[in-house]
Length: 366
Image (tube, rainbow, N blue to C red):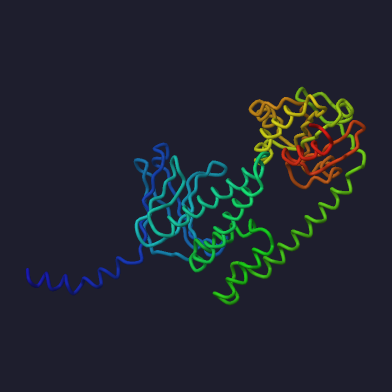
């Protein structure tokens, strides 16, 4: 017995070393997947697959074990396109829970939990800012504060987590949301101070940002050139499939707001409740609204119309945002609205609900 104890003590360091650096994924799936195989893909860079493992689902559970690797994200996936379920996971040492049932998340280790918490918080802060931005009765100070909180969070997370996989992914996913350009330059300079020739925010990113600003300025100039010009007429379809011209709606009211949107456009749908309020407030004072959708799928369009219950006329341009209509009106993104007077002259462009009301007040609709 004494010899066994001594042998165990001699082997203990070896056992300890062998147990370190391993991950153990314990997955949960719907029982409908019992008997099917879950796959684990490991990557090098964005596309190069370095290894593939598989595990059979039994009683709604599956398991993977292997050597820890915190240099790249891996993906746990099941199903065939387009019915695929997948979860990103950091193959970090320890027990990792992968949920692919009601939730789709990996947790249980530091980096996986960090990945979840950062994404959840940046989405929350971004939503707070966006909701205030499209809300018509919001004070500017509130919107600015929400945007400042959003920007500070991205900045601080980048600085604090620049050396780990989750931090690198976070800034890659969110640096395009940093605004204005001065904030991106500030972040680049700070990262350069901490780590020379950093690869997170580079001079190339700053150059791309500037090019984006130049394009926006060009778009703004094109839009501005449309003001005080006549609207362009197009033949579209209404909800019954009948051909209708935009001209049929021009001149029937003091002002006509044309709202270009689509059922697949989240910001468009988010703006509609606010547009309804503006319409109800000003419809008896001379405002009418015409919605033109860029849906290519008429079924999706009609389904959205039933849910959104917009009390104004609806037309569809089924050729989408690549149509002659979109090009003629210089529409590069939606939602996008233009305001016409009774003679069909464009008096304002690039409007949403809040900016529309500002123009209406200038036009004397009180």
